[in-house]
Image (cartoon, rainbow over all chains, first blue to last red; front, side, top):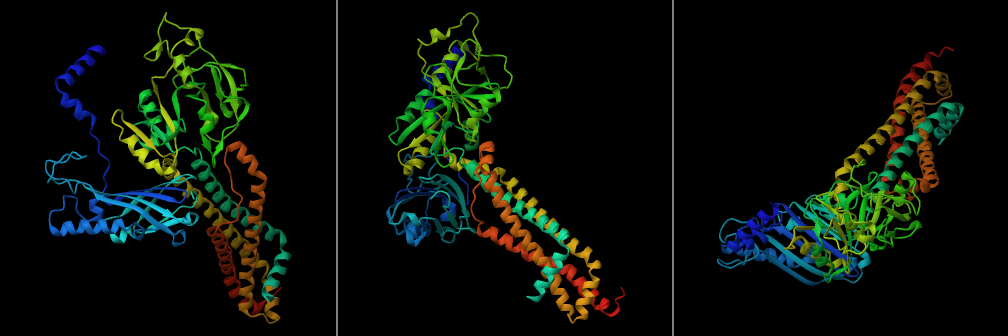
Length: 189
Length: 419
């Protein structure tokens, strides 16, 4: 019985190769307005950070920027996010500087007909998000004891950042919110 | 200063009741601080159940579910991970080491974990401590087993004993792998983690005891003896989960994402430290309850003190009258009683704090060994100092209550004392 049904499904797959193709690559991450994720990995004097935030939080809309005003808003947000040390402020004593910062607004460059990593249709209402990766070097990493952020005053849609931290000493999770825009690394540094 | 001296002398005069009050306050302070110590100790021990592991990989599921079955041996996996996927992850360039875990069998209610000897060196707990063997050593033969401290203690096993693994995870099982008994090759030292309650065997052994089984039951007439099985290919087809260590922490999120997006099989990679925090967040309500209870105990002790001062007030009318007659103003009487409350509480707080640290110092090794709970003997934190100071202040104000009464009485009594 088992073999039969396996054979049957194999036959279906052979007959409709497109089905097999689609069945493999359907995957969508969670998307909650007001909530972003900030991943922080610290080792030696290097800090790697990655921010993923819904477009709603950063610019207030999630469709492809169409008007000049919207395009300008996206550009401005990207500019702000690129200046990472002024958004996520590590202690001055740690003497950190940015090695690399890369901010992109996913779907923003998504032209009609172009294939991208998500399964939306261009021009239709959709969820877009900002995705930023940073590499930071700190001259005095022993002073990296915590972090403060102006993310919430810079971006009025943001309510919460779920922060995941991994260091040589361990891992932890914390939340930075509009009311408590600070992160303590006590215990893992 | 005079007032404090008078209050002190007056207290000395009634030293039994005073001492009892101080003891009550001391006990409540001990409880308040002790609960705090246990709370932070439990939290840290809990967060240190597993350390040194960067990622835990299992079938696609919630992070808590994966953490619960892979680390705490609670609940079951939603699915298995194929050996092919395991090898794919093992060959990722960022991966430094990977330890397979296979769960699903049990021995008298204790979970059996199929793994390899790397598990004993890579699984770390409590600030990166490694497992140590109380006796024996890791498994060498196919049918060797390493048991946790609790398993050895509760079932009375020692190195060399034969044990039979049961299929499934119930405490009473009707289907046993009786044809292929294991020999206890080592007993682990107590860790205070779920390792203590686990029977460890090799991954190949898990494969071997199931080799002549089909659909979760032995096939009649098709039994393969323990000796025959040694000649067979024992590469596992699937595992339950895997512990992964990375060469660099910086790659953690990248590797995690790659495993979560792995096309060939739906997998989940979780960061154990993060998942432990999440889990603690769920049980954290109990923490608040503990703190509330201990705060109420302190309030009760202070109330007891007020009662004590109030009840003695009647007997002390004479004392008050004498004080008044020698020129003490009603304000002095007020100050005297308030100082008494403050002094009693201060003594209680000091005694309680000292008592707590003495108790911690004495009981710490025992608690650590018996419950796997490491309590830190560190000086009170700023918020604890604040608590202590506010208790003393509260005691002073609680003393004002009888003081006000005495203030009013002493005015009247001063006029018409008749003894």
